[in-house]
Image (cartoon, rainbow, N blue to C red):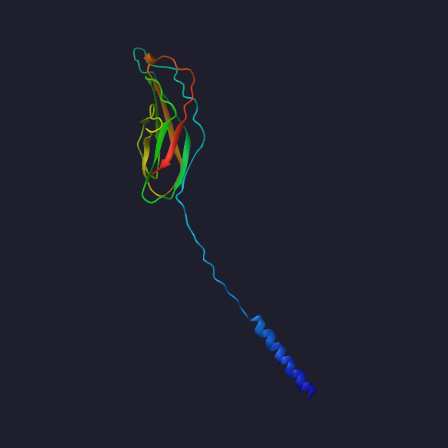
Length: 166
C-alpha cells in the first residue's frame, strides 16, 4: 500500500510540474509609430576661389571663371514636391555676377541662375519638382563674372545658402 501511495504521489507531483512548465502569460502593448517631415542636405565642401585673370581686348566683359568641384546630397520624405533655393548673404556690387547651377536627377535644375542680388527674402529657385526620396552627389557649379568697368575686387567671401524647402 505504501508503494502504491508513493507511486500515486510521484505521478501527481510530475503532473503538477508538467502543468507549470506549460503555463504561459502574455501581455499587450500599444506601440505608436511616426515619421516626421525630414529635409536633409549636405555639401562636399567649399568651391575653389573664383579669380578672374583675363579678358578680351576691346570688351568690357572679362572672362568668367567657373568651379564645379563640389556637390550636394539630399533626402526628403514630404508628400508632393519640394525645391532647392539659393541666396547670398550680401549682394554683389554692380558689374559683378555670381551664378549657380545646381544639378538634380530627382528634380528639375533651373540651369545657370544669377544670385548676385538674391539676398535674404529673395532666394531663387534653383531646383524644382523634387519628389520624395534621395539625390546623392549632384554637382554644384559656380560662375563668377565681372565687367572691366566695375574695377578690381579684392578677395571677398560670400556665403551662399542652399535650402531644401516646400
